[in-house]
Length: 448
Image (cartoon, rainbow, N blue to C red):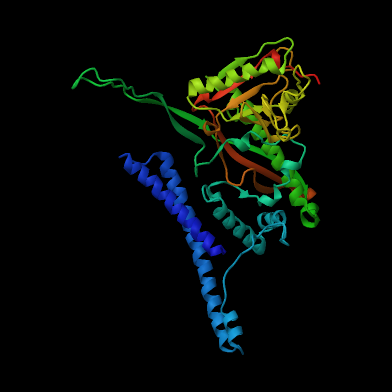
C-alpha cells in the first residue's frame, strides 16, 4: 500500500468514527455531549489536514504521470515505454528518522532561536506528519512539538522503573482543549421486578448520576544543554530524549499507582476511595498463606464490580518471592511454563520485568518497581493490586511521552534549556470496586 492509499484509508476511518458518534446520538434521541462535540471538532480538523495532504500527493502523482508520458514519447522500445509510465508515490520518508541526515534538536534550536527558514520548514513538515500519525488528538491542540518516536525508543533500556502499569491501562486520547475531563457516573440505576398482575404498575426507579471530574495533569522534566552539543554533537538527540522520556514515564507510572490527586498529582490506584481492601497479617508469611488473600482480592472484584479482573500489579521482589517458594516436596510452587506444570498455583518465566508472562490464577502479572516497598509500621511492606484494565482509563497527549520546547535562558553562557513534558489524566474512580489492594505485615521484605 503506497502513502496516498494509507492516508485515504485513515481519512475513511475518521469519517466512520464521526458518523458513529452522530449515529449513536441519533439512536438515543439526544444531542451530542460536550465530549462528543469536542471529539467531532478534533476529528474534523484532522480530516481537513488529511484532505490537504492527500490533495498534495495526488498532485504529485498527476505531475509524475504527465512527466512519464512525455518520457514515453521519446523512449526507444515498447518495453521501456511501459516501464517509464509506471509511476507511483510508494513512500515518503519521515523528516526525522534513524536514517535522516538532519537532527530534530538542531532544527528545533535553529528555528526557535535563530528563525532559520529551512529548519522551520522541516519542523513544520514534522508537525504535519505527527498530526496524521496521532490523528485521534491533533498535536496542534498542545503547546509543544511531538518528539520523533525513534528518539524515545531507548527509554525502556535505561535504569529506571519505567511505566509497566501505565502501558497496560486503557489508553484514551485527551480532548482537544480544556484542563478537566468530566465523566458521568451512574449512582442510582433502574429497577426491574416481576409484574404482580396484568395492568398493574411495573417497577420504576429514576436513574441518577454523579459527575466525575478529574484534572488533566502535566508531567515534565528539563535539561540544560550546551549550544556546542546541539551544533556539533552526534547522537545527542537520542541520549537526551531517552533520559527525559524515561524520567517522565516513571513519574507518570508512579502517579498512576500512588498519586493523591492534590498539588498537580494524578489520582492513583492507592488513593481511590471505595476500592476493595484486603489485609494480609502474618508474622511468618508464606506463599501458600498469601494465595487465599489474593483470591479474596479477585473475588471481591467479581462480587462487587460484576466483572472479572485481568491484571495483577506487584513489585519485582514479590514476584521473585513467589518463584522462590517450594512445597513439601521441595518443588517450586510457581513453575516455568516450559516445565509442563501440573496443579501449579501459577506459571511463568523466572526472570523478567513488566508484563513478563507470569500468571497467577490465570491472571497476567506485571512486575512494576514503582510499587512502594516502604509501607506499613516497619516501613518494609509492599502491596499487590488487582484491577480490571477496561476500567483503568489513562488519557494522554499524543506521542507520549514527550513534547518538547527550547528556550535560550542563558545566552551569555551558550546554554539552552530543553523542557520535555506530557499531559495526562488517570480516570480510575469510575468503578472503585474494579480495584483490590492486598497489604499488611504478610508482605514485608521477603527473605531468599
